[in-house]
Amino acid sequence: MTRDLFARHRAVLPDWLALYYEDPLEITHGEGRHVWDAAGNKYLDFFGGILTTMTAHALPEVTKAVAEQAGRIIHSSTLYLNRPMVELAERVAQLSGIPDARVFFTTSGTEANDTALLLATAHRRSNAILAMRNSYHGRSFSAVGITGNRGWSPTSLSPLQTLYVHGGVRTRGPYADLDDRDFIDACVADLKDLLGHTRAPAALIAEPVQGVGGFTSPPDGLYAAFREVLHERGILWIADEVQTGWGRTGEHFWGWQAHGKSGPPDIVTFAKGIGNGMSIGGVVARAEIMNCLDANSISTFGGTQVTMAAGLANLNHLLEHDLQGNARRVGGLLIERLRAVAARVPHVREVRGRGLMIGVELTRPGTDEAAPEAASTVLEEARAGGLLVGKGGGHSTSVLRVAPPMSLTVAEAEEGAAILERALRSI
Image 1 (tube, one colour):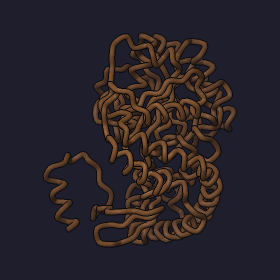
Image 2 (cartoon, rainbow, N blue to C red):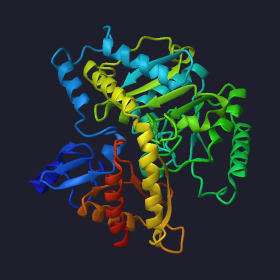
Image 3 (tube, rainbow, N blue to C red):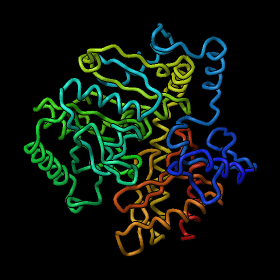
């Protein structure tokens, strides 16, 4: 049945639509931190639909909220007042840390970043954007144009002038050998030099932890130091929290808070986990920025009632059960367990991450050369052992991405680490 579905998939869907595994997997249902495939095989899910199933599969509070809202009305568009949308916007604005915040809902992280770019360029009257090397911000024409990851950037055409800045990757590149303080100073000096050669850009967009790039991040405080430079010149800071938001990093509710010394971002984008699988994205910005557009606009599907009901239920569950604290505690144990494994596997260059956002970088033993074939082997072996993980990396890197639902238990973390250890030892 799966082979037949695969053949049908290939016949009607684009060749560039990526699929995991030599024998692609059809996931039919899930519960908690587990999913099942069409053949009845059970897996511990350590990737959560690309960090989207944030709390748990089939979370009762979310399924109940969706069913009840669907029984009343599913959709009306933003042309009408929408109580669930207003209620979720109030919660997000309050949690954002941005003063006088306004919230606009979209259907995805790509669309959220696209909206942030529209706001920043309109507010600043500039189409120049600063972005980080190794970054990923989505699939739209504008988002691809600011993505600093060749593997996910199919065209160099763009409505934007993009200038790439150092700093998103701590352990590679020209500043890798510096200590944290000198690393930050070097990146700030590079930013200042870059700004001396160009007209003032509209904004810097940055992921606090680079997701598709392999869960890389700078030392804490880099973006705070960048913000001082940007603020002097009126340049906005956009924090792409599509993968890092809602407490996944454990230490903070938003990834930008590790860089908050100079204040919050001007714009925050979010998506993925807030809907726990329902299609929600969004933008938070100061009122003067959000309201800068001088033409009417709507969103047909952004903020639709059924997705907003899901987001409210999911956010309430996350906060009431302190899943941020759980990500910090269980994620810390999982990282240390995987580092102990890595010490005995020559292919592992580094285990890095925060909370339940962990990257295992693989290289050819004794070198810094990426080992994509090893990553593929581990992905397949982990599946055979009953564990689903992701892949990532950019600029000749190969990384296993580990990001389970934030309700992961200690026993499940240990079980997953044991399966991943066997898979790594199979290289």
